[in-house]
Every structure is written in structure tokens, then in C-alpha cells.
Image 1 (cartoon, rainbow, N blue to C red):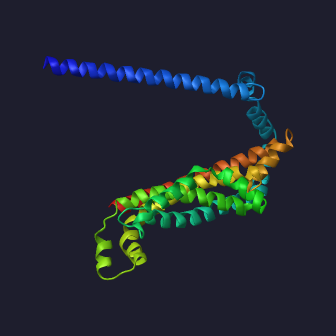
Image 2: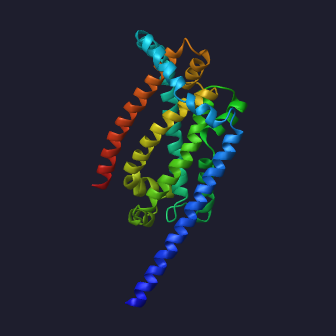
Image 3: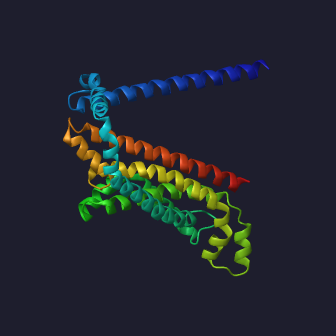
Length: 279
């Protein structure tokens, strides 16, 4: 017992030492990274930290003075919001379809070409690796500004992100229905549609709804780089400067209410789908 206790205490000391070393390395990296970022920041972080609440205060003060204009401005920007939601919906649908195909082709035991499983997984990694804004900037250079580049960019990133999640769901699916369909001569597509999809569809829909929420935010952000939607209007409202901050407040309020609405709606249906799928 004394020997076991001594070994346990030695192991505990080693863990504490390794933990302390990792903590010191982490702190050193954070400090050095912050110093490099601060040295390259225009004006310096510490010089501007005191003004961090100045702009929000100006927006709120002007919005308070022109609060009567907010309903009219929200109605004015409503078509742009609808465009943003349409971009998110179309990109989520297109990305989810791509993700289903990629996930089935990259799941061992289900893949049509088992030797290419690694290739399809790397394709999903590549699609996830590039942020939507990077893809959108490239597409805007090629296709010009508008909602189409934003939709394609978000759809490609969605395909990579959902494909990873869908493949993990596929790995938990039972292979018995697939084997039964295979024994009666069903094609690979029939095996996936009839043997796998009924098992994984609730989780697929749950993840797709969650991704739809994320894509609404992404489509609004991409408006800043000329992809249309309410983000483009928000960029213009910022550029107008003081005197039009009531438009900025109206857009922020419209975005906030929209995101909360879809978050609550999709959260409700996600809970139902997961509950129904696990029942």
C-alpha cells in the first residue's frame, strides 16, 4: 500500500508539473500574441480602449431622440431582411443536400466507394477550412456583387460543416436494414434512402435548423462586402455617420428580433425532432 501510495503521489506531482508548464506556455503565448497584435493595430489598443462605449452611446442617444422613426425605418429595411433570410434558407438547403451526399460517401460501411472515403473527408475538411467571407470575396471578384456569391459561399461552408456532423450521425445508424436491402438486390441509392435515411432524418433536420440560424448571421455579415441583404444596408447606415444612427439602430433591432424569432422557432422544432428520433 505504501508503494502504491508513493507511485500515486509521484504521478499526481508529475500531472501538476505538466499542468503548470502548459499554463505558463499558454500565458506566454497569449501575452506575446497580444503584444504583436497591439503593435500592428492602428492607433494602439490601449489608446482606443477608453472609447469602446462611445459609438454605442452615440447610436443609442440618437435612436432615443428619434424613436418615433424606428417603426418606419424597420418597415423600410424589411425587404432587405427578407433577402437575407432567403439567402440563408437557400444556402442551407443547398449545403444540406451536398452534406448528405458527402457524409454518406465518407462513412465507412455505407460508402459506395470505400477506397475514396478519405478523399471525401478531405473535401469536407477543405470546405470547412475557408470562412464564408473568404469564399464570398473570391466569388464577388469573379461574379460581381449580389446575393448569389453570398449564397454559394455559405452553401459551400455549410456543406463542409454539416457533412462532418451528418457523417457522425451515420456512424451510429444500424446496418441491418442496409444489409437486408442489399440481399434483395437494392441499389446503393435505394439502400441509403430506405435503410439509412429513416434512422438519421430527425438528427439531420435538427442540425440543419441549427445551421440555418448560423447562416442568417453569416448572410447579414456578408452584406458588408457587397453581397446584398440587410448587411449592405447596415454598412451604408454606418457610412452615413452621425445624423443617421437611427437607421443603424433600426437595422440592429430588426436583426435582433429576427434572430431571436428563428432561434426560438428552430429550437422548438429541434427538441421535437430529437425527442421523436430517440423515442
